[in-house]
Length: 259
Image (cartoon, rainbow, N blue to C red; front, side, top):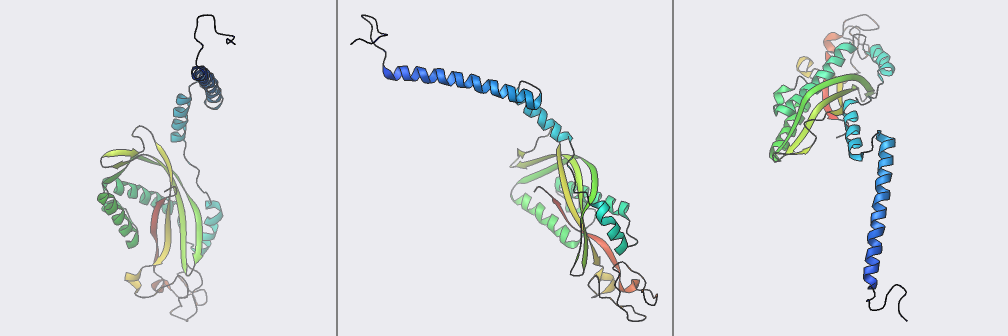
C-alpha cells in the first residue's frame, strides 16, 4: 500500500528525517515558550523585558545597599557599662572601625605595618596571611573603602576573660587577583560586606608582670577580692586597686563574616 502523503513517482520521506523535523519544530516552539517565560519573569522581577539587563540592575542595587548588622548594642551596652563604668562606646566604635580599615589597607598594600593596633597574635595572623598570598601569587585589593556603621554583636564573660564582638558594615571595590588575573570581583562594582573584630579586656603584662585573670585580684589594702571587673577601688575599704588591675581593651581578631 502506498503511503497517504506520497504521490505517484515520489519517494517517501525517511522516518529519521520526519523525526528530526519534528524535534526541530519542538525545540523551536520550546525556545519560544522559554523566551516568553523569561521575559515575563524578568518583567515581574526586574521591571524590564531583558533578563540580562534585569540581573545587572539587581547587581547594581545590591552593590549600593549596605548589609544589615547584628545590632545588639542597646542590649549589651548597659551591661558593659555596669561592668566597666569608664567604658566609652563612641571611642571604642571609632577604634573598631579604624582597625578594620587599617586591616584592609594592610592587605591592599601588602604591608602589615599599616595595621593601626592589635594584639601580637593579630599582627602575626596578618603577617601570615600576607606571606600566604605572596607564596600563591595572590593579590587582594580594597579600594574606596567606606564604613556605614558599627554595632556591638556579642558580649561574653568566660574563664576570666571579657570580650566584645563588634560588626562593621562597609563598602569597597574588592578584587582578587591570581597570577595577575582578576578571579573575583569587579573594578566597576562595589561590594557590601560585614567585618567582625573582637576587643578583649586583657592584662597588660609588661606593666604588672605575671598577674592574670580578669577576676580573682585582691585589694592590696585589706585583701578583699575585687569582684567588679572594671573597678579601680576596693568596694570594701575604698583602697586603690588600679596598680593591681592595669588592663586595657585590646583587639584580638579581624575577619569577614562571609569568608
